[in-house]
Each structure stands twice: as structure tokens, then as C-alpha cells.
Image (cartoon, rainbow, N blue to C red; front, side, top):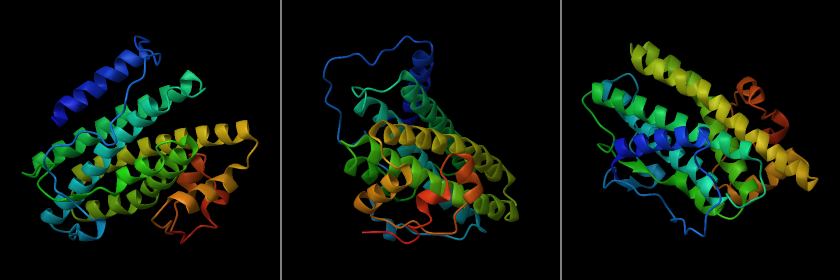
Length: 253
């Protein structure tokens, strides 16, 4: 997979979508189980991916590489939710939201990859893990579960940890990376908001309590843990109030 071409195509796709030159009406298309990937990075179990201290250049390269990998997966997760659930009875604004998310995730990937290049590194130089795409695999036929796991668990976690990452890289004298993380942080609030909006929409349509439904889906589908501390303010600004997650601080299968 040519990742620069991928970003170019995502940008072209989003432009065509918002110019209303694309439609979701199509014949049956068999979607791949997983997106195409380049030969590198080598994928390892999450606990085998090496961690380094942010205070060193090598450590910051490792951090940026890990974030780059997250953003690449985020592009595919946003596009997958559009394609995989295109036949469901949803307003076009649902798909508008996820197309904007895909566009912004591609922007994040490009910013982070350029920063790696500035540090004489590139995406693929270090190993990464495949845990993020697992969320798509286990929710392949359940839109509500997909919304619970991807934007409301995985992306919301970014709201918790990114502010401290920004401060850490600033202390290390890396203002360029800090500026990129600030952009990502602000955009991710919007991504969580898209997930929260449509999760609540589906719950209302089914006559379900959103917080109780979220907790049930997390218990059934999420293999990790919801670990405090939580950024309650940023989460609430995105529509994810503490009633959703405060009773699940250490949930995990």
C-alpha cells in the first residue's frame, strides 16, 4: 500500500463526497476483512512493542511512530463505518460526519509522518501493534457496538492522554510535535462528538438508555480496560458524560 497515495485518495474522496458527487447507492460489494497495509511496520502483540522515554530523540520518534500508526488505523476505521453500514437506515449527515473524520485522520497521519521525516525517520521503521483494528473485527455487524468501541472508548482515550503528552514533549523542547498534538487533540474532540451523537441517536430510536447500553456493549466486546484518570471536561464537551464510563474504571474481559 502506497500511503501517500492513500492520503491523496482520501482527500479526493472527501471532496467528491461533500460536493455531492458520490452516492451510497451501489450493488453488493464485498468488503475486505482488513485494509491493505505496507510490508512495514512489523506488527507485534501490544505488550511486545518497545517503549522509550520521550526525553530523548529516539523516544520521541517512537512516540510519533506509534501515533502515526494510530492515525492510519483511524482513517480506515472511519471509512469502514461508512462502507460497512451504508445500507442501514441512517441520515446522510451520519455519513457526512464520518467522512469528515476520515479527512481529518488523514491530515493527522500526514502531519505526524512529516514530523518523523524531519527527525530522519519514517513510518514503518519501528514495529507497531494490531490491537486497534481488532475493534473493527469484533463489531463488524453491529453499528452500535462499533460506535461504543471506536469513538467512545478508543478515541475518547486520546482525550485523556494527549494533554499530558503535549506537556511532556514541550518539556523536552519539541515544540513542533507539541503543535501537531494540539491540532490532533482539538480534532479528536469532534470525532468523539460524532460518535456520541449517533450512539445516542441509535439508542433513542430503540428506546434504550444510552449510558446503560454503552456499558453493556463495552462489557461484551472490549478486551482492554477503561483506565482513569479521565478527562471529564473534554469528554463532556464531546457529549460523553461521566454516567457512561465512571462505573467501568477497570472493565475488561
